[in-house]
Length: 147
Length: 135
Image (cartoon, rainbow over all chains, first blue to last red; front, side, top):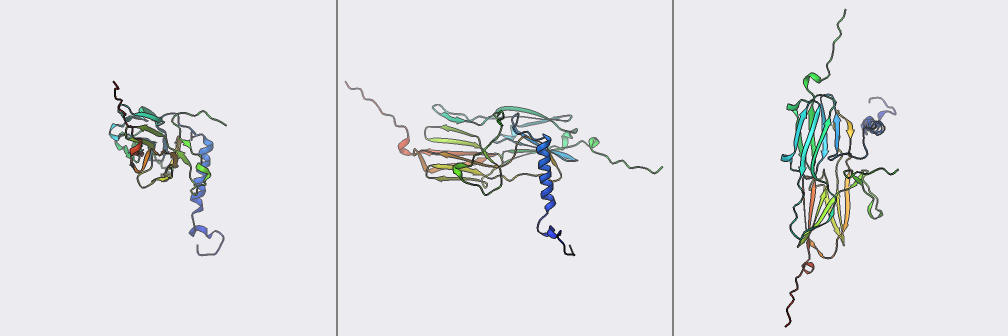
């Protein structure tokens, strides 16, 4: 920073963050992790870190009290339903595209889930579940002793 | 290459009326239900990720345009391991007929669902015509 040079663009922007984001996007595109079309309802995205994973799902217009999240081993199951509109007599649909009714999805995560530490939030129609790893499943550092 | 589409997938929007966008985001067509009651036409639009601040409804002449802006979410320190949906803006336009009173449109957003109630104009309400018996 104190000497002049062509690499002084750090003050303007961080090119590495943008480049690593682009690289990650490209890797994801070619790795096949991303499915162009969702196979089941609701569509989910899974973010994985060292300590926990975050599962997000687009679930517009559900009652969070009626959503059920259950855990078994490394499986996370979402069950719920979306109440259809109740139409009165003489009321007719002109167009019906929104899918609904009951759904149930089981997702397998790459580690065993600490069921007590799960945190689920529902905001603006997006469900976000933070799923922590169990303590015994976390990566452990092994120190090497000198012989 | 045409891929088989499933019911649940998000549909990417065509740019309406040959306009160009200034935001570098994907745009999706939100799914909508429309039903008609005696006094109104109700539009229910699924737009997960929007709230009352980020959804915009404009009515110009007979075209009702709904736009919703969604900021992409990135969780620091985590990588997207599996992905079935992508976040992007929403845009959809409807042509509404004269029978809707354009000054009486109510809109609410709850849990990512936009609900628009278009009240019918007085003259368009169904009138029952009594038939008199002519003896």
